[in-house]
Length: 231
Image (cartoon, rainbow, N blue to C red; front, side, top):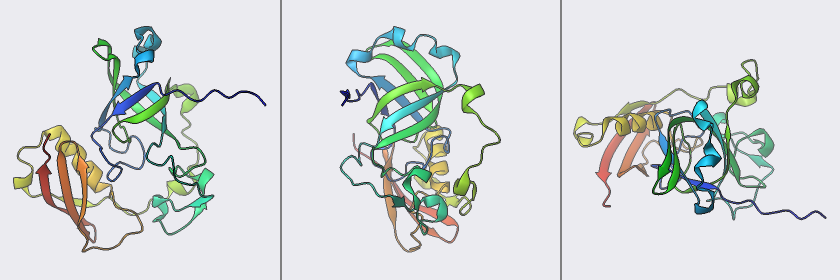
C-alpha cells in the first residue's frame, strides 16, 4: 500500500457568511459577493502566486468544514429539483459526500503580494463560509475549462423564479450600497431549503455585520428586520 500524505490547508477564505444559511448554492450566482484568500503561514511566499495577475478567474478546492463529521449518502435531494427528488450524490454538488471537498470558480478582483499576512487574493462570486479551509488554488483556463456546448443535466432545469424582494427603506439607511445589493441578490435567489413552503415562518441569518429576518409568501420575500451586530 502506498503512503498517502494528508492534505495540507494552504489558505482560508474570509467572507461575510458566519453561518451556512444564506450562502449561495453555487459560486458566481451573486457576483458582487467578496472574499479574501489568506494563506497559511508556511505558504505566505509571494513567489507562489507569481503570474497569477495574468488570469481573471480561479478554481478553489476547499473543505466543507461544517460537514466533516456527517455520514455521506448515496442519494441526495438537490435544491434545483425542489428538494423533492433524490439523485445520486455523484450527479450533484451536495456537501454530503464521501470526502467533504468543494469546488468553486471565483473572479480575481485584486492581488496584494506583501501585506502583514503575506499575499492576499481578493475575489468575487464566493460561495463559502467565513474561515473555510482551502486545499488548493488553480487558475481558470478558458480554452480547456469552458465548454459552451456542455449539457447540465437536471441543473439546466430552472426550479422557480427569482423572488421579489421587499425591504422597508428605514431598514437600509446605514447599510453600504454594495452590501445591500449583495443582500438583495442573496434573498432573491431564495436562501430557504427548497422543500420548505411554510409561508408564515420567519427565517433569519447573519450576513456581513447584520442579522437579517424575513418571510416569504408566494413569490414575495419581505424583510422584517435588519439589526446591526455588536462587534
